[in-house]
Amino acid sequence: MNEPSRRLTDEPARRIRALHTADTITVYQAYAPRIGLPAARDGRFPAEWKRDRMTWIKPSFLWMMYRCGWGLKEDQETVLAVEITREGFDWALRNACLSHYDSDVHTDQADWKRQLRSSPARVQWDPERDLRLNPLPYRSLQLGLGGEAPRLYADEWTVSISDVTPLAHRIHALVRDGDLDAADRLLPEERPYPAGQDLLGQLTG
Image (cartoon, rainbow, N blue to C red; front, side, top):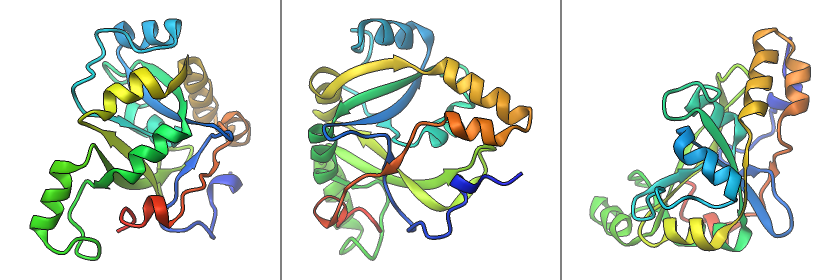
């Protein structure tokens, strides 16, 4: 059975696809229950969550499922949907650099390393995934937050945190049973995020 909504032939090579409103965007992370459960219960990250180390957020639900194995990998058993302000997300994009050197974007390796040292965020483009977690021929964004950005993310940008582990397990069960249409209907409604050249101009190499 095909996955019509996941096999798009007109997708650009790189695009942010996300569940978003006029004011917020939802990103995904997966943690051990000792961190994930209190975060979902209280709607904020607990003190144990390290605000001084880099954290990676993913707007793509299926890429998160690929990364955490549908919430079955060790220390990734709790999958969180974190709704954050678009203002914060856009700030991170404006202050990000690519996580890798790209000769089409950077003057030279030294230029890239200077950006890497000074930027509080970094961007990585990874192949989007289908329901069977196979790579698709276009890429979705991962956003790494470092420097001051993890604290801003946890304490200022976060609007709500939800435990979507049961949803992940339900979709996974449908995929295992071969009911891809039903699984597809349960996926978050991810639409192209309005990010133009002002946000992604130096991040699409």
